[in-house]
Amino acid sequence: MRRVRKKSSEEIKYQLFKSRANTLVFIVFISFIILILRLGQLQVIQGESYHERVENAQYVKINQNVPRGEIYDRNGNVLVKNKSERAIFFTRHRNMSNSEIMELANKLSNYLEMDEENLTLRDKQDYALNNYFDELLKEMPNEATLLDDGNISRNDFNEAVYENISNEYLDSLLTEEDKNIISIYTRMIVATELDPVTIKGSNVTEKEFATINEDLDKLEGITTGMDWKREYPYGSTLRTILGDVSSPKEGLPKELSDYYKSLGYSQNDRVGKSYLEFQYEDILRGEKEEVKYSTD
Image (cartoon, rainbow, N blue to C red):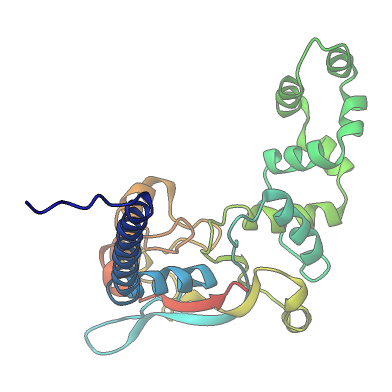
């Protein structure tokens, strides 16, 4: 009878090592196959998607308004047309804070002279709370004492300012430069990210336009260009039929805001408010110009 030779411990150890080595090589081989397949998926299948993500991180697309369409009668006579005007625009960049906008408004006040007639009492009160707080404390000693003793909060004091501080007092407190800054700031602060708003769209002087153009690299988010306003060759004749368009500051009228936003409009867009301007808005609005900026 044939005798079976027992394997030595050395042979057993070698076979175990060989088996484990083969298993390890197999696992490494499978891992490489999976890695190659994954890289292929990223490059071929998802490559375009990742390329778009990288590009979107490096560039932003900003829609700029274009002139509104003109209105003619059936004989080809112009009833409503546009007049081009120099304009100063602001685009709020991503993550731009209100304090940064105020700082920019302060810089712009050295270049622009604004119309202060449309300033509201609340605009002036907010500015005074941020820049003339000590003066307000002196003007309201009772509330100042309560605030100092901790009996009212800063918000309570602010509310007292809104209720008691008058236009007359603020007009004596604020300088003309202050009011100019407020006028600029109130036009800028309504801007949403990457959506240009008009800071000054009429009566921009050649000097204002030129000096801002020279220093655009120091004024983040500021651009210059041409804006438009409606002109009516026949004056007030037919105005009740032709209708009106909102101003750059007004943007979407409050009563029509939800309607226009449902159609994809931005809050600062100028739109038809009544009659023919409203009825034919989809034709007259024009198509916004898309401009791509690098975020580097």
